[in-house]
Length: 141
Ligand SMILES: [Ca+2]
Image 1 (cartoon, rainbow, N blue to C red):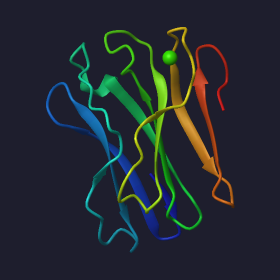
Image 2: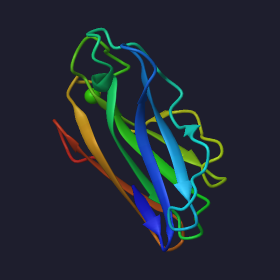
Image 3: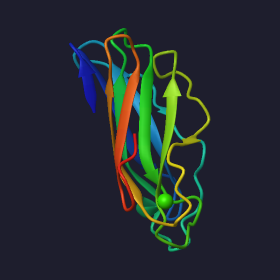
């Protein structure tokens, strides 16, 4: 969750059933009195081979541009190796205040099978994005 003044932006994990999960986004622009209808952020609801839906992807994080229109989401995702432990950082963005989202983009270029986790983001005053994450091999940016 993050905010711009009295506007609040939330990303949360939604479970369809015992093996599928995805991230939803919603926002309030009136100090939490009303909330938008949720929109789905990520485009993969890949089934987790271990039947632990919370482990297929997790740790969603969002950042907002100063005008509230560009919204960035990043999370750890195991779609490349759903039966293993090779997490990667994936990313999606919205240019319309969270109504629609880009296709998922894999951010790290790791081919070693190590984990990239815990993405964190900050938005510059011009709307540019700085992103970093923890990596089993190096610091990504
Ligand atoms: Ca990885």
